[in-house]
Each structure stands twice: as C-alpha cells, then as structure tokens.
Length: 325
Ligand SMILES: Nc1nc2c(ncn2[C@@H]2O[C@H](COP(=O)(O)OP(=O)(O)OP(=O)(O)O)[C@@H](O)[C@H]2O)c(=O)[nH]1
Ligand SMILES: [Mg+2]
Image: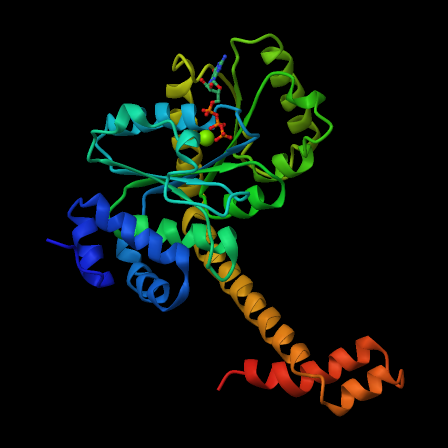
C-alpha cells in the first residue's frame, strides 16, 4: 500500500512509529511551499512539545556524530524516543545520501525508538535557520521525547541553528585554540556545555584549561557556568557525563523558568526572521518592477540618491502590503 501524502495521515502514522511517514513529512518541510505550510500548522500544537532539544555543534570532524551516537545510547536507557537531525548548512543536498557519512548512527539502525535524518534546505523560505526549528516541531509532534540537532560549525549558520535548541553542546578538540579561525567569543555565547572530544590525543587538558580561563573572564553575568567535559567519543568515555550535564542544564532551565520562556522567545524570533525574509522578497520584487516608475527616472537622472529612492519605493510598495489588515 502506498502511504498517503496527506500531512495529517502521515503525522498519525509517524506518531504510531512509522519512520517512513516521518521522513516524508520532513521532506515536505525541507522543500517548502504549500505542503510545508500544511505540515507546519499541524505540528505547532504544544501538546506535541518535546522534553528536550539538544544542539550539538563544532568544527567538521570534531566527533559530533560519534558523540551523538553515544548520547542516543544513554537516552535510550530510559526508553525515551529520540529524533536526530543532522544539519549541514553548507550542503544543498539532503535525505541522507550525501550526508550519510556525517551521521554515524549504525548502532541504532534497528531501534524503532531512534529516528535519524540529515537535512538541508533547498526550497525553504529562510534556509536552514528556519527549516531546522520547523523540523524540530515535526519531530516533537511525531512523539519524540528528545531531539538532538547536529550542526557542522561553520560560522553564523551554527549559531542560527543552535537557536533551535534548549541546550547547546559545543564540541572542540585538543589544539582547537591554535586555530585562528576559532570564533571563541561566538562559541562562548552559544555554549551551555563544552566537550573537549578526542581527549585520547595530546593537549586535551590544555584545551580544557583554555576554555575554563575564557569562562572565568566572562563569568558573573549568568547563573549557569558551562561545564567543560573531556570525552573520547570513539570509546564512549565521557558520554554518560555529557548526558548528565545536559540533563543538569535542563533542570537549571526548568528551575529558573527559562525553558518555557526561551521556547516562547524563540518562536517570536522565528516570526521576526520570517517577516524579514518576506520583506526582502517583496523589496527585491518591487525594485525589479520599478523600471517604469517616476522615482526610478529621478534616480537615473540623479535628482535623488538611492537611499531616498529606496525610502519612496518602500513607502509606496512594500509597507502598505505588509501592514496588518
Ligand atoms: N581519536 C579519536 N577519534 C575520534 C573520537 N571521536 C570521533 N573520532 C573520529 O573522528 C572522525 C570524525 O568523527 P565524526 O563523529 O564523524 O565527527 P563529526 O564532527 O560528526 O564530523 P562531521 O559531521 O563530518 O563534521 C571519525 O573517524 C571518528 O572515528 C575520539 O574521541 N578520539
Ligand atoms: Mg557528523
């Protein structure tokens, strides 16, 4: 029997544990358009909310997938259903074929309580920054108790995708601080937990001290100080401690009322990003159709400058359309 393409039917099947239906729902979200909107509306209800969304980010090859694989094992001890989303901001491809080697989840392949999916964003309005939180909502609506989002750390994208998580784990390796590319301040801002992975290699202790020193400099403001853990993901060392640290961070968020508040804040941020994307699209369209307008003629004749011309066009074309009815 061919599964129905009806989003509600697919979501019902996904809730009952059918991973193929869940995969199809995520494909719809990825592609964007009317089907994605239908899925998004179904997935928004708070009844489907997850217990915890964990973001894992770090440089390519830092050992994120190996750590996630271990974490999933820890999470499954309590029979919680786990959804893993591997997000690659640099890849226009998805569905697992291209990113397959980035997700090392073979150990859980036969476990119906574990759903793994890699993701890119071809047609989605806002790229991955907006596709990821929507995908997380779909996983939640499908009954996942915990969602883990793995993102390759490549600058801004990792920070945006980390915005979909309650708890963000930043994975570094020994010697990471020598890398002039390391965006230390940016990582400090997003990290709730640090992991120095590949601690079987020289320099792990120095990397830990380096991170602790950075945290000392920034300490004071926040009541949560990110722990710095050592791990050897390849052998499983430190993975139980990582899961404990993630749970401790969640407990902190709950105790301080931040879990719900942050989730609500993220929704409002997401709305703002969506509005910005719409306005950009509208503005480009207006500029593209501006050839015959008087204002464009005055711009060409250098009677007015591009800033004043832009103001005029925005006032005339974009803003009235964006005004609430
Ligand atoms: N020596 C050592 N190697 C490790 C450790 N953890 C992971 N690796 C190896 O590092 C390589 C990359 O691991 P992945 O888990 O795929 O890393 P990743 O960060 O998910 O990689 P991308 O998704 O491609 O960015 C693999 O060959 C792992 O076997 C570790 O603790 N020690
Ligand atoms: Mg990976």
